[in-house]
Image 1 (cartoon, rainbow over the protein chains, first blue to last red):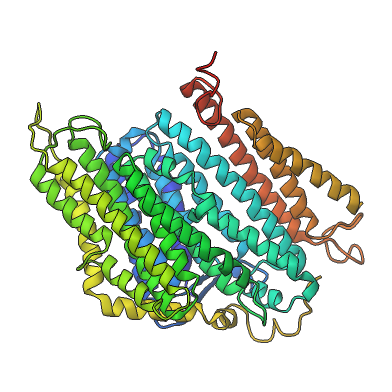
Image 2 (image 1 turned 90 degrees about the vertical axis):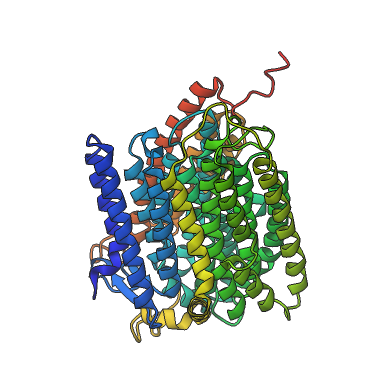
Length: 507
Length: 112
C-alpha cells in the first residue's frame, strides 16, 4: 500500500500548521513555504492522474482498518482530475496573492493551505461522514479567507455565507443520521449496496435523506433557490480568494456526482431518480438566472460571480441527462469554467487597479492605464470565457450540444445555453467597449504589475492548451464518465470479496 | 422514552428554525445553537436508544452502538468551533456596520 495517497491531505495540513508557527517570520519565507507546498500538490495531482489513468481504484486504508469499518481514501479518475485542477488553480491564486494581497491580513498562507487540505480531502474520501468533516475544514478556512483584508462589505457578505453554510451542515448531519439509522454504515460503497437492498418500507425515508443531501450539496454548488449568498460573497472577497472559490461550487457538483451516481444509483428502482427529476428544471432555471444576472451586474466581480452561477447551471443541467457522453462533456466544461472564472476574478482586480476611479464598477466612467495591453488581454480572455474558438470553452460547449442532440429534453438545453452565452457575450463586450474604447489620459501614470499580468496570460494560455490537446483530454474524460457510471467497479475495489454478501441488511 | 425524545427534538428544531428566521444576528446564532443541539441528539438516536447498555462488547448482552457516539462527539466539536466563530463574526459585523441586523442595515432606520 502506497502512502502517497494521503499526501494531498497531509502536505497542506502540516504546511498550514507549520505556517501558523512561522507567522512572525518575513512574508517572503511564508510565501516560499506556501508556494512550495502547493507546487508539491500539483506534482501529486499529476501523479494521481497518471496512477488513476490505468482505470484502477487506488485505496488507502487510514490506520490500516479494513473497509467498511475504517475510513478509506479512494483515488479514481474523477478524484485525480479534481485534485489536479485544485492544485493548479491554487498555485495560480497563491502566486497572484504573493504579489502583495497576502499582506492584507494575518495568516493568509496558513488558511490557504487548510483550504487546500479540506478540498483534497473531500475529493479523496470514500466515507460519507468523513466527507462532512472535510467540508467543514474547507468551509471554516473559506470563512476566514473570505474576511481576509477586512472591511464592511466583507463582514456583511461573510455573515450570510457563514450562516447559510452552518444550516447546510446541520442538514448534512440530519441526512447522515437518517442514512446511518436505516443502513448502519457510512462507507459509500457499503451504503450503496445496503440502500439497494433496503426493504421497500424504508424507501420513503431513504428518498428523503437523499433529497436532504441534494439540498446540502445544492447550497455548496449554488443551485437556484439556494444561490443568493453567492454573488455578494464572491464579489466582496479579495481577488485571489474569489478565484480560489471558483472551485468551491464545483465541490458541490463533485459531491452530487459521487453520491448520487454511487450511493443512490444501484438497485431496480434507484433512489437517485427523484434527484435527477428535480435537478433538471432547477439547473435550467439556474442557467437562465445566471445569464440574466451577468447582463444585469454592476461590477466586473459581480458579473464573474454570475458567470460561476451560469456554469453551475450548465454543468448540472448537462449532468442530469446521465449518459457517458454528457458526463464527459460536463467534466470538460467544469475544468474550463473553473479556470475562466478564476481568470476573470483576477482580471477584475488587475483592471480595477488601473482605473482612475470606481475600481471595477460599470457605472463609473474613468480613464484606464495601459489601455492597449490590458485591452488585448481582456479581449482574448473574454473570447475564451464566452466559448468561442480556439479555446476549450468552445470545445466543451460543442461537446455538450452534441451529446444532448438526440435527447428528448436536449432542445431546452440548447435554447437556454445558447441564449445565456449570447447574454454573456453582450455583457462582456459592453464591458470591454466602455472601458477600453474611451481614450483619456490618467492624471498620474500607474505602474502595472507585470507578474500578475503574466500569470493571467498563463492561465488563459493553459485554457487554450486544453483545447489544443483536446483528443487525449477528451479520451480521459470519456473514460472518467464510464468509470462513474459503473459503480460496481468502485464497490468491488472498496469492499473485499465476500464481506458484503453474507451480512444482513440494517440493524 | 422514544416519544419523549422525539418531542424534545421537535421542540428544539421548531424553536431553532423560528429563531433562525429572525432579523437580528444574536437570535439567529441562538437558533443555530438550538438547531445543532437537535441535530446532535438526532445523530445520537440513529444508533437506537438503549438504557444501561455501555458501548463495550461483553459487558451486556446488547451493547450500544459506539459509532453514533463518536459521530456526535465529532459533530459537537465542529459545531462548537463554528458557533464560536460565528459569534465573533457577528460581533465584528455589529461593530463595523453599527447595527446587528442580518442584512447589515436596519430597515426602520430611515423612518424614525
